Image (cartoon, rainbow, N blue to C red):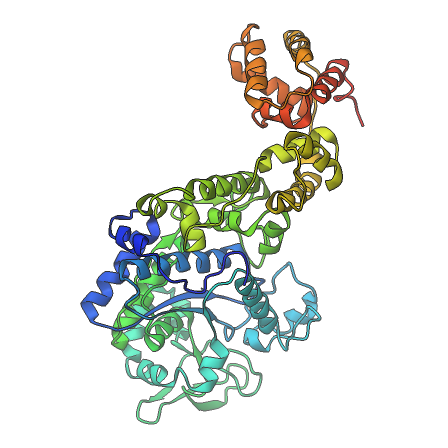
Length: 541
């Protein structure tokens, strides 16, 4: 299992006792499910997440599984694990391919497959998987497995063709008029003329057809329609994989057939949730509980899309940061729109370790409000991290070191005896910091020459640091920096620190400067000041 194993651990009795008063959002959501089971008297609970494999799985897909798992854990705590629970990760791989994602190969070949179920679209990636959907499904499952999620994978194509949905499809045929009455008022005139909740699979082309029905026979479970190209009358059953449902009806069919009790969805699907819930009721079922989370945005503030590939992929995040930081990003403020770009990574990394450290000595009540508990479904492991990720990034920058062994030379002076073997978590962060700096910090660094008063202050700082050669006392060094800044007429002391970052590090923000000096070294910092004063750092390179 990966570092975030979700194998339904035994519940801590203290956490169970504290759960009724917990206010973290997973508990607020879980209380909806508790009220549901108390009302219905059911004996088990089904959580579900959905995925459309018409594009590569992205972080939003992972986030839905992550967040639902957090709600599932909270439900188990609130009910003292009295109800068996399951989490279904459902892939709608029978959906027809409507457009070719721009971020995949074989564009022309895939364009010829428009209209085919995604599970029958050729695989453009050269892997051993039989179809585009099979490749994407495998990637999603690999990510979920690496994170150790406890889930059951389900494929739309498998469920339709195996007969798993047959009873629900026959019920959909029975309430066909009710479904039409729900959906038709939401459609434009042209779409109303062709709408049916059933999408036949054309026996001639294999494509998913959007055609009106001309006949229905509830007793036999058969429907008839006209081939849109030949005009031929085609008759088929709604069972056995011969049709799939339009997606709002399909969502409702899934909830009804699988008895789904909880599923969250993006804010852009609020109206769809309402319509699918009405269809479930028409079928005779009970819509699931859930909430609508806000969407992730790219660096330009646009919604991320799996077809455009304009967000961060799961692999990309894990190239530059630990998986726990990604989980923290998913936990925080799910109802607020958040930019999902590379610049959010350092903050998420350091915040995770801060929460993990706080969790070590919290009582159960406080622990249940700590994001680290929800990330791990328990108290997280303790880490020995004497240096923050942000500080490591600045060390890489100042030392111009893209070799881990060079960085460890600085680290060992700051933390005597520290090695990759004694501090494995720090070693992991060193690797992340080197990669992140090379790809995102180094290309954007812009040094400037100091203004006259800033230059005087830098000379004063150099002089004040001179007697402290070899010091690693971050607090004492921070005091020196602070006192030097106060002795000059900066409008705001923040302007002094901003000048330090811009002149010496080539960026607008930076670490606590005393901590940076302690790690980088007093003598090295003085040499850096000399370069900044001479203009060498700001000179064209």
